[in-house]
Image (cartoon, rainbow, N blue to C red; front, side, top):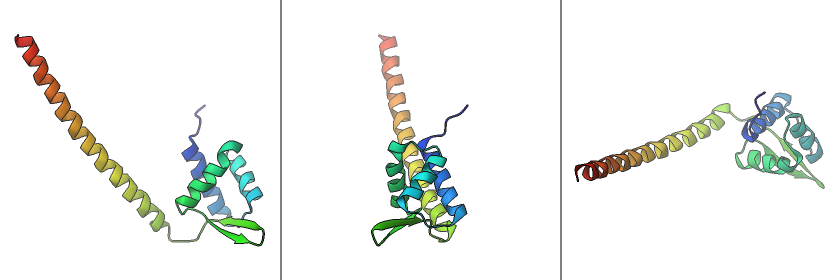
Length: 116
């Protein structure tokens, strides 16, 4: 049985909140997180992740805080993710080039050793 990563669980939580379209206090948010198999120790981190990624919003209402998924255009979220993936791809391309240069240098060194 495949275990879901914390990122997959967070996205499952986001999807659940988005599908239900409601407003949740902290206790309700924690219950939803447990439904998504997020460990109690990771719930606060998951909440902060979703807030930092602007996938959910929060607002103080009296003494409680309310959380919800904004009904923004999905393309905003997807565009942000696309930009992150493009940046990651560019970094990987640079790393690949660097490794290829290093590999070629090592091959040249080996040729020099084999000739001696």
